Image 1 (tube, rainbow, N blue to C red):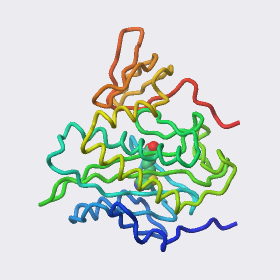
Image 2: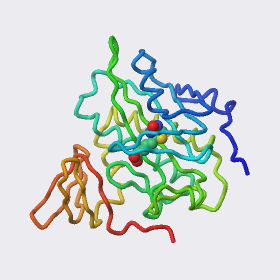
Image 3: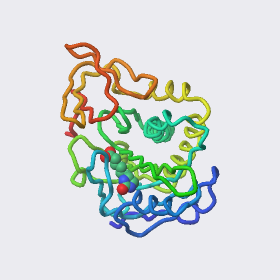
Image 4: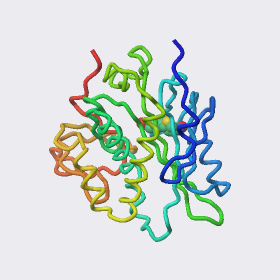
Length: 263
Ligand SMILES: O=C(O)CCCC[C@@H]1SC[C@@H]2NC(=O)N[C@@H]21
């Protein structure tokens, strides 16, 4: 059965100033939006597609999904120059807060695996990739990309520790409604990011499913640290109690010992 398309009409006038453009097919919504950002596009533009064929993932991985089986979305922000640059690393975590909050309001038991994977019952349902784009004559842009698996079947999942909303709920997902809900939460989380970083950190910590877990952190330089994740610090980094003492992780891949493959 053909999966339903996004509903242009319901996405045409959204609160928060979001302007949504829907592409039938594109290699990567982040790539399209980054190009628009470089040409000086104003914040608020959202690019989504029915079929992303060569999406970009974290750590140079790919992110490709069958047509109409996911929400593959990129939203353009241009933080005010008055926001300190040290707050930028919180943007991916902020996006995780927005997606997890939207999913929770829809009844999913969503949580955040550090830094910004959204999990349901230990399985990944959404990945997030933020790209910073320098723009001549304007403040730098953040391309906020997220991919939510909405109706992927078990056979279509890229890895056995992934899931989709429909696999979790057993019910069809209205992708248009879900996109509207996530954009509303993105507006709210962005406002908190701009005005009250401590409140954002509190919200992130409430949603974290990594703190308290036995984890293995694989760092970009090749180091591997194992231990219990003890906290998210004020810079959004993960602190791990290893046998050699506390270690602070700013970037890398974190694997939960208890991540469960779908049976
Ligand atoms: O590796 C991850 O977990 C991050 C995946 C991010 C995928 C999204 S889908 C929409 C946007 N466009 C891209 O090319 N990537 C992001």
